[in-house]
Amino acid sequence: MTSAANSTPLEQDARQVNARDRDIRPGEIAIGVIVGRTSEFFDFFVYALASVLVFPKLVFPALDPLTGTLASFAVFALAFLARPFGTLLFMWVDREHGKGVKLTIALFLLGGSTMAIAFLPSFEQIGWASAALLALFRMGQGMALGGSWDGLASLLALNAPKDRRGWYAMIPQLGAPLGLIVAAALFSFFLATLSPEDFLSWGWRYPFFVAFAINVVALFARLRLVATPEFKELFESRELQPAPAFETLFAEWRTILLGAFAPLASFALFHLVTVFPLSWVTLFTGEPPLHFLVIELVGAVAFVLAIMASGLIADRVGRRAVLGVSAALIAVYSGFAPQLLKGGTLGETVYMIGGFALLGLAFGQSQGAVNGSFPVYRRYTGAAITANSAWVIGAGFAPLVALFVASRFGVWAVGVYLLSGALCTLAALALNKEWAKRDADR
Image 1 (cartoon, rainbow, N blue to C red):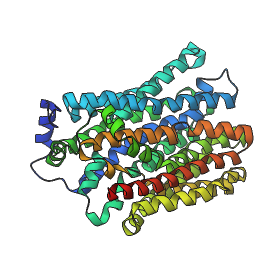
Image 2 (tube, rainbow, N blue to C red; image 1 turned 90 degrees about the vertical axis):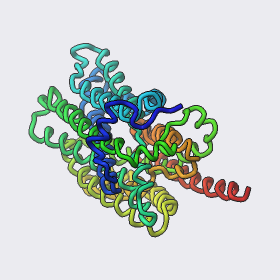
Image 3 (spheres, rainbow, N blue to C red; image 1 turned 135 degrees about the vertical axis):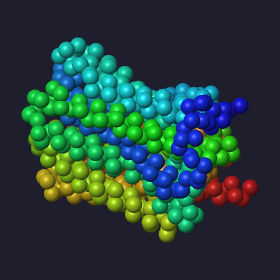
Image 4 (cartoon, rainbow, N blue to C red; image 1 turned 45 degrees about the vertical axis):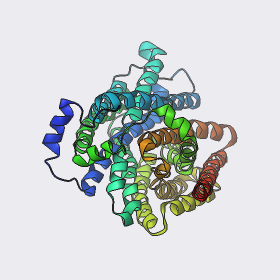
């Protein structure tokens, strides 16, 4: 038996303080979802930028710059491997103690792991133990991200007007560009105002402190919604109850597999415009990182606009059509775009803005593309497993693979890697449609 959504005195108090015996409108839910996702992606991008600008010099100075960056990207991938374990652990906490307790622990673990990185000793101080601590804190971030799955995106979608499902589906995705903008702006500020020595010594640490404060704000925003009557109603109808993870995996493996591959084009492109280009430009062009971060900030604004456009378009033509067409456009983009990174400032700008525009169209509708195929009892757990699988397959190793193949074979090889993701998305969408027809005929 699962516990009630508001099972502890803490959650009951939150309900009395926050719900105020009134309905929560979709707009209020949207704000809570955006705040929560922005905090998660801010943590994500703070680490991602530091994995290029800081850790190769601070943690892996014994290696050459390329190998040090590859080692940094290998540690970067650990969070994605740890996410499924976090989901398992925190779903148990959810069943035993309620969602409010689960979210509180998960977000404090996320913020604590991120802030712990701010105190990381360098290789010169403690040797390879610095890399071990970085890996430990990175896995803590991954466990926390797996545990912070709250179902709020589902709450938003289910409360959205029927003719605006595409618009409300894109709202949680806005957290990605907003988190990137804040993280890149902070790093740009410290790079511009500090000497390289001061930045590497202490300046890079401040964004990690900011991450903890943002997580505290996000925690209260999300608890505000968990305490509402609407959330409890969906919980008690089993819409937002966690089902046993392995039971869900074995029973819904087909839907989970398709759901993991359906957003692969956007998830692969995600790191090929946010993380990989900074490493390539820093290592192989000799340009100052600040110059490229400014281009990335401009691209992030295009990312926001494209995500919003995806919602408007999806409400007219359907989410599946947006995912399919954007995957096809990403396949075309993969054929020529990586070469633009060798074209100086103009080429880099075209690569970034074009990539972010395509990413926004695809990523804006990638949230829960197949979640409606899960039965109600397994929807919450199935959506969490699907999201974790998609991030591991499509994004976790993307910067590492892209930098490795680019350094070995040339930047054109990154296009082949991206093309494989686009083809996987198109295949998954085709199979999902075909299997849906077969199920309907039975």
